[in-house]
Image (cartoon, rainbow, N blue to C red; front, side, top):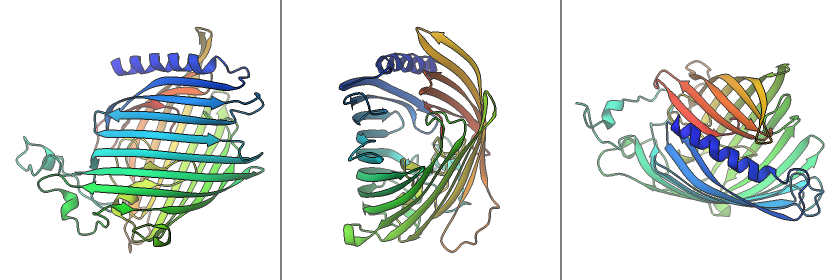
Length: 390
């Protein structure tokens, strides 16, 4: 609860500083806030985010463009530096430019093997256990530097996406025996470039982006990694994502997300931990962004499927310090599985995570979320973050 209290206090301070120009800002505006979170996979996270907004004459919603810088660390070994640019109205109406430069280091990054039925024996990494092998048996070091740029063009509710990314990953092993070192199926242990060309279609009818009550957000994204543009690996990845929102009563919303992804070619093992999309790239299956209640990246493979079913109840609204605040509860069921190359497609063997959440929102757009979840391998996982998962 100590972490939660600090997080909510910082969130309120941040929201007041951001909301003060909400009635129609013009020109440039700067906002800098501390960022904190906590989850069971990475521990306590802390950092700072600074944003520069250009509202021009005030006729652009939410801004003409923004430039954001973020530095973030966790006690679980993640170090991250991000520079992000977003221009919703450039180079012209119904067009959008985005770009990102990101440095990310995981020390350790988890690896439990490829496939849906991989074994996990916690005793192998516990020094007190008779079966102890190495405290880093399920880990390795991953350093990733990426630069992305994309362009979107809107045609009614449909957007067309095109983009390019330069990505380089360094892989290092710990001393002693580790699962990754002994796994002959894991391609890409030397790391290297995975540069990609990206194209996609997006269909978006959500009524309110931060907390939708109705509508859909669907995208189909194709990524091609090839030596023609400097990649060390030749593979293709296709990702389909559908998010559906339905208002059951005035204060109760049913939200659903389905993700299906298939990769072909010599995709390195560390790329199979990511799942693509038009908005951003996250990791899974397992962890705060995909299968809550399961260990981070617990299940990986060149083909993956997962879903999230969530019921959200906004049960109280009030005003504090001249800010509109709401409280909400949620219950969710996450499920999914992966397939290795050559495996028959079947939906048996789904892994699940079950849990609930508590949400505090300021002025509708700034939402703090505390989620609790469990699974057959994890008694209780806790995730503290900004916003709804999807």
